[in-house]
Amino acid sequence: MELNLIRDPDVAADGPDSPLAAATAGRARDAVAMVERAIERRNVMLAYQPIVPAGRTDRPAIYEGLIRVLDDKGRIIPARDFIHQVETLELGRRIDCLSLEFGLQVLRERPKLRLAVNMSARSIGYPAWQEVLDKGLAADPTVGERLILEITESSAIVMPDLVQVFMTRLQSRGISFALDDFGSGYTSLRHLKDLYFDILKIDGQFIRGIARSPDDQALVKALVAIGRHFDMVTVAESVESAEDARYITRIGVDCLQGFYFGAPTIRPRWEPCDEKRRAG
Image (tube, rainbow, N blue to C red; front, side, top):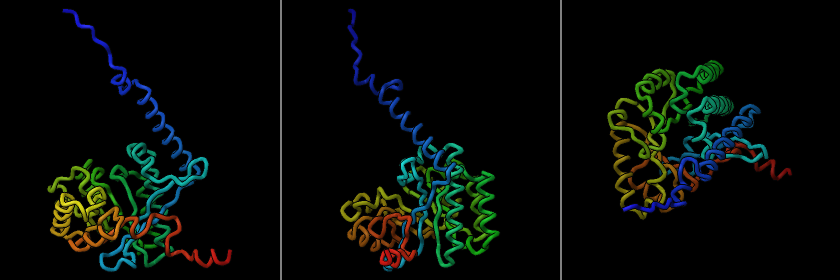
């Protein structure tokens, strides 16, 4: 019996040669080109988000510096809108260099500040990144004790042996390390045991709405226990409500970060903006 096979147009539309795939690829190329232009012009900055101690939320212990670029129209574009397109490219290494450069500069300007700066494990061994770090430490050796390098879980697991050597070398110079987005990737306990992170940042997908989610409560309690066992400071990411903040504090998380305590801003609280506004 001969079968009359009719191709489903909706299935075809999702294939590699579909209009949707072409549009997605086009947006990715546009994002990369936009970031390249911004970096060439140094239209790049850090936005700062506070990380507060549980129980003393009025006084940030750390700030995280999050990379931002300006597009061709002068709009501030957050990293989440382009980082996945550039992370594996040499362009991603250049972004890490600028993040570190700007972070070291503000640490020199603010002697009491502790600042976390993001980097990819792929930047380990990138000569220009190491040059930025060496130059910054030579200009002010005290910044190393106040610098925290954040490496995402998914990035760290790509090359755990190299990350281990890198961390040991820089920790001897006073630099601390945070494992970012913990729980979202594939870090095995064996790797966590070998990689001596100072700070464990629990991925926000488990934190948003945790006060009303028994499943997330169980998961986060387990992650906090892991952090405590390995003597790491725990940070809950994406805290967005008072209810969640109270619950997280009650189960023993050390620090909290999220919009409830402050959105990332290019004008952090340490700048004397109020006087300028009144004068204007």
